[in-house]
Image (cartoon, rainbow, N blue to C red):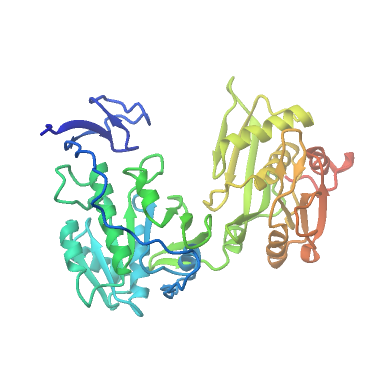
Length: 465
């Protein structure tokens, strides 16, 4: 019989190495290689001897179990309408962002209509009870336990009174006693998740897993963990802001890229029904370098303020600082402004910020970013009642974006009067604007002309102080 061998697995990316090294060759992380014992490979499987499986057609009578609604609108929206029986959901986020708080509130709501259990591997029972008292959910009929052994947890799920919803906080603290590696290693995380997902599919329990993230913001442990589960949610937010964003990046039972907006208060997380009004609450009038972008997050239109500051640089190499947007797209927009429109940004520091702590990822923000940069350079404020959206090409053309009608309706609902948007339209008809004045542009040069000095033919407002 072959002897077991050893290998070294990176705890950040799951890369396998034959020998230990201070730096992982796959992801570049330092001191992340951990030794694991690999049992001898089993002999090749001989043909025959297996149980014959039964194949069925695609069209058949399927039993649809109603989704379990938490009656927290933002949470149910991201999941696509509630939890599906037998599903496995992974929720990741930075330490202290509010993952445990969110799930405790969710499971307390679900416990009103379903049997729920909360298993904590990081905190004692009394600590979880203290949080429940602070959140005002201590009277909820939630079964609470502190455990880390997967074998003990699975044994507790066997019986007629087994829970219908199970929360594991967190998957990195769980361990399978058949493995010699420590909890949190790649092998333990993979094996623990596999056992929990298996029991979820077998019994119909909806499992919610809390996952830690690395310094790069990805789920710690093997990448295969995100492929194993049905839904992956990321809980995001800036430390200096009270807003929290629950973003769906994978969902087998609903739309992806959907977001839920919460506000962190002393009483816990409160859902925000109209995030656009909240993100624009502190916006000021006649300030150069500020522009309202009409964006889409999943199926929801969200209006946010994009702020830019262009200032002379005291250094030989100008700075480019970005918060809430892709720095690569900022470099592209500034290059197009310089090469195609003759707007010189060389020798200037450029600072860009998405107000409110939201991270914008869609290309439709290109035009709003360009408007904020031009406004900061010229000192001409973009009118407060105007929203901007559109994608910019490398030839300075302004390209159409999807969901134009939804963006305009949200802007009109919040009292905006003007919209700067691409002239070309996607399929589905020309946006009516819902009473908004539509300013259509084909080239980036048109936007430059709008934001120049009024005495030189510019159409927008007066020079901001």
